Structures are given as C-alpha cells and as structure tokens.
Length: 247
Image 1 (cartoon, rainbow, N blue to C red):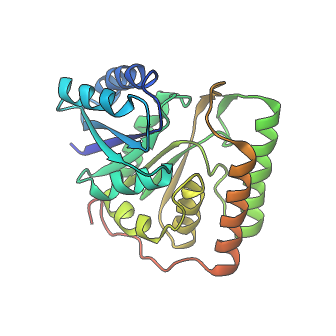
Image 2 (tube, helix red, strand yellow):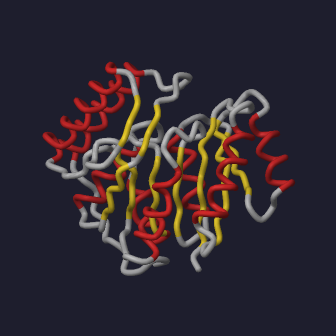
C-alpha cells in the first residue's frame, strides 16, 4: 500500500470546494482502495470563505482531508508548499472543477507505484483522449504545445492539463528547481523532468471545459512565453532522477 496526497489548489472557491471534496472522496475510496489517499486543499490567497470550508472538511474527515494555507496567490506556489511538505509516497494535484475525468487517476498513481515512473500526467492531446472545449481554447492549447515541442525539443503533448502526479523522490528533486510560481509551473516541471531523464507517463484523459474557468488567457500566454524563453536560452537546471519511490 502506498500513501497518496491529492492536492487541490484553490483561490476563492468556497462554493465549489465542498462538491469537489465529496466527489473526490467517493472516487478515491472506490478506484484506489489499496492505497491510503488524502485530499489536501491548498488555499492560496483566498479572500472569501474558502479557508473556513477547508478547515470544516478537515475537521469532519480528519483521515481523508487536510489543508495548507498561503497568504500569497499562485497555483505553483501552492503546489510547491503542499508537495514539499508532504510525506506521502505519491503527490499529485487536480483542479477544483474536476474537469478531467477521475477514471484516469488510478493509471497515473499505479504508473508511479507499480511501474516506476517518476512523473505521470494527464494529456488532452494524446491518442485516446476525449475533450470538449471551445474552438478558441483548442487552437490556443495546440499552438502552445506545438511551440513547446519546437523550442524545447520535448516529446510530451500536453503541458498544462491540471492533472499530474509525482513520486515523493521526484517532487523533492524537481520542485526546488522550478522558478515559476503561477501557471507556467506545470510546463517548467515537465520540461525539466524530460530533459533530465525522469521517467514520464502521459495518460490520455476525458476533459470537459469549465465555462466558469478563472484562467485569464492573455496574461497567462505572456507568462508562458517568458518562461519558455528563460528555459530555452537560460538553460535547464541540473537535477538527478531519484532511484526509488521515496528517495
């Protein structure tokens, strides 16, 4: 049996969070009964009642739900804190809207625990994926991922699907090398991992676009382009893949 932390980074999600936790608790108990799973709400800078909701859920389900809190915003910053402070064998994350089908999650976890992958990630562009989203976001996503592959000479197809898992050893090695604390965190993680020889598993997912997404396209695009330029011409950090699940 392995321990698995599922981090949910949140910003002002007091209304969405209870449903997410309930659905996720039910799914994990049936799809991964052989592992010890815990949901970790990572509140980063919320100004509504999100933190109170997280505390109430953790109090009601102490074995299944925990939380961390940061006063400063940033999804990457929230993941950095939650993953580096975790003692779980596998650390992961998914978005609070659960746009990605949970049926793909066991494949990611078992890929790490049973097959020895360092990083597993959901892909909306891999063969076998099923997605529903607007033509505008489809074009932006495909263009961005083609740009990553052209500039960085990488093989992975989808950098920004909010559905990723790492062994504890991989997280402890990779996360401190990541500079970005916001949306580019995901891309930077995968680029460094592939370039430095980490074993990576790309899992096709079912994905349904959330019409209420908080992502602001143009600022995110600019952040991503700056991050790619930094990695392309500033160099990839040196980091060694871990030898085992927990190392």
